Image (cartoon, rainbow, N blue to C red; front, side):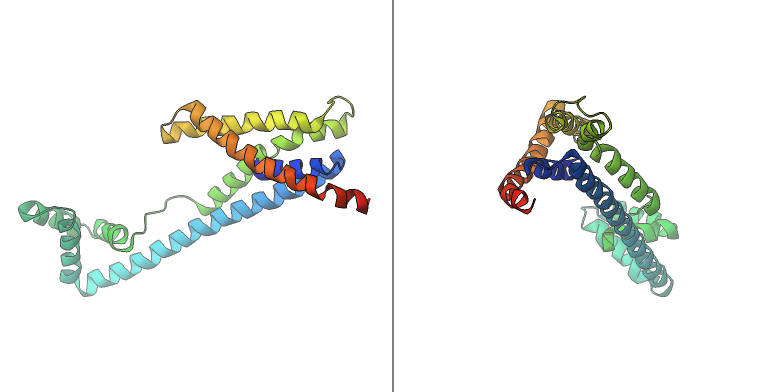
Length: 214
């Protein structure tokens, strides 16, 4: 929503038509959404590859030098404050199960968290979410193109819809960060508004150039 509305704001500031806003805003929506989805896909895929490489390395070391790997487990949990019989019990329990042993070493030694998310699913969800929310700033311009005159000022209406979207997204985020709905809502609204304001200002600066070109 931020990136799409930034495009809408900058184009609207230059005084170009709703059609131009839709072309540039739509191109940004589809391309930026794909970029975000691809980045998410590649990131999760890389995490899985790192985990698989670490897993193979640990499985090999456990087979070849089990006592050395057992000592590593002992040192890891000793550093966490465990000692004596409690420490030895932890070592025995973990090393008794090879899968648990490898999992522990991957997390503690390599710092690689186990990734259960499907890279493809994450990419698809990211793209759909981006399209759904990102299309909100364009809705009023679509209506204006299909039904001219129904909306007196598509840009002003777009500001209102986008502001609501920013606040709602921030409010939903509050469920996961344990902060006030209003605090998160207004914070997201402020950041989105700031980005849009910068884009609108750039559009105003470029307006003489656009008018000259036309």
